[in-house]
Every structure is written in C-alpha cells, then in structure tokens.
Amino acid sequence: MMPIKDPEKRRVNGREAQRRYTKRHRKRVREAMRRYRARHPETVGKYNRILHLRRKFKITEADYQTLLEKQNGRCAVCPRLASEERYGRLHIDHDHINNRIRGLLCQRHNMVLGLVKDNVNTLKELIEYLHVDNLRCEPNLFELHEKRSLRSDLGGTDRQRKDHSLFDGSLS
Image 1 (tube, rainbow, N blue to C red):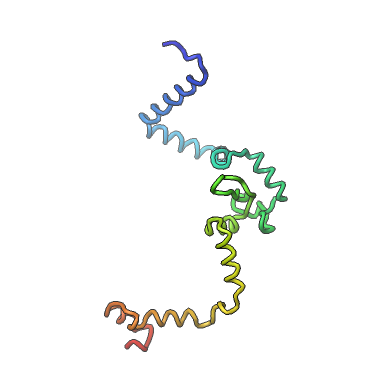
Image 2: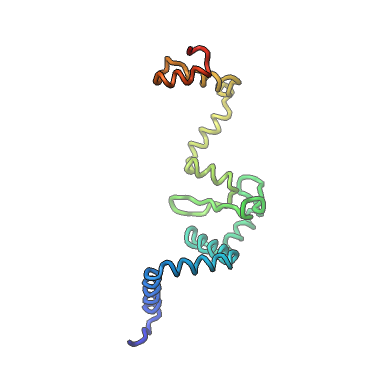
C-alpha cells in the first residue's frame, strides 16, 4: 500500500483508523484514559479548560486573561474577585443567540442571567417587585397559607383531611 502524500487525507485516514481501534478496544482505551487522568490531573484539567474555551467560545486562555485584565480581575457587575470564585476564575457571559462574549461574571450573577434567560423585561419586573412596599411579606402570611391549604373545604381525600387534622384543630 502506498503512503498517503496529501497531509489532509493522511490526517483524515488516521482519525478513521483511531476511531476503528477505539471502537474495537473500547474497554482497553477507557482503562488507559482513566489511568492517565489519575496520574496527570493538572494536565488533564488544563487541557479540558483549553478545549472548552476553544469549542464553546472560540477563544484562547490568553484571550480570557485579556478580558480578566480589562475588568481588573473582577466580576463585571460586582466587586467580587476571580480568586474568590470556585476554581479561581470567573464565568464567561455570552449572548446565547450569536455567542458574542459580553464579559466575565461571578457565579451568582451568571446564574441570575441564566435563570431569567437574559430577558431584560424579566429583570425589570423583578426590580419593580422588590421596590413595591405593599407586597412585603407579613409575618404570619406563610402560616395563614399553610392553614388554608389543610382545611377540608379545599378538597382532598378523607385520609388527607384526617392526617392533616393533627396540625390544625379546626378540622376535627
């Protein structure tokens, strides 16, 4: 068999051969990978980080460090330092539609944006909710709700009413 001269074809052929080998010797490959990860956790962690940045955000570790320096090592929203975060780094905030990077955030602020799905209107509604004085919880509001939900006039089976009668004397 003649060697493949075209580097692109040689690379593709090599990948296909590697896939066939991995498929045939799945247990052996997995065990070798497990042993390597156990012996070299720092190397594997750094490599995984590099792959994550490249695949998800199309940036390098140097690009991340540049962003971090522009933000003085802090979250773009609050004064929290990257060193105070888990794993010592901030999360990359990006627009989920066009994948454009907006900045680096601490875990708390990154989660908030994720939970509201980057919806500005939802954030405005939450801010308005926090500013309304008459919606503040009254001290007995939770207890009142709990008692109402246990009353028989709200339905439930006889067994449920019987079990809940232990908690509220008005049901017996």
